[in-house]
Image (cartoon, rainbow, N blue to C red):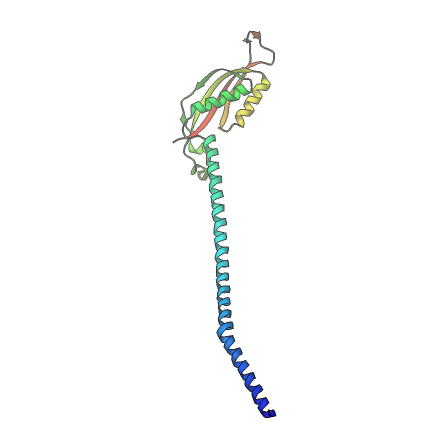
Length: 200
């Protein structure tokens, strides 16, 4: 074979390889590359959607936590300032605290509920959240040691239901306690307590 024929054959082979390379590129590589680019675009869009959905889920969780906290605060407020007088509940708490602190209640008198004026409750922003407030007075006659009485007062002040001590009178106790004469550290107490409630 002549040199020129070899050169022509090699050029034709090279041209065939070049045509095959173009065909392979345009038929297989370019569609696959376009598909990869499309999939990358979808992945970026899905990533953006996932990020925005994650932010929405976190925001919803934050709102739910805030709602739960507010409902717990409302329950706490309902225990401190019940809706309605709940005289029985207040008496039960007073009796429970007195029993716990070894204070003997000899008599309890309950006054009729009264409506508290809004000027005594607080500023307008706080009263907008609360119903009008009423009060109930309890007049107690009790006996016990002075240390137990101090504990009784401290427990009333830290009780979940709001009690204000309006008046206290202390006198030496001259009677007997269970058949025994009272000790030097044993007194009779006259107290006036005030409990609060929200009007329904």
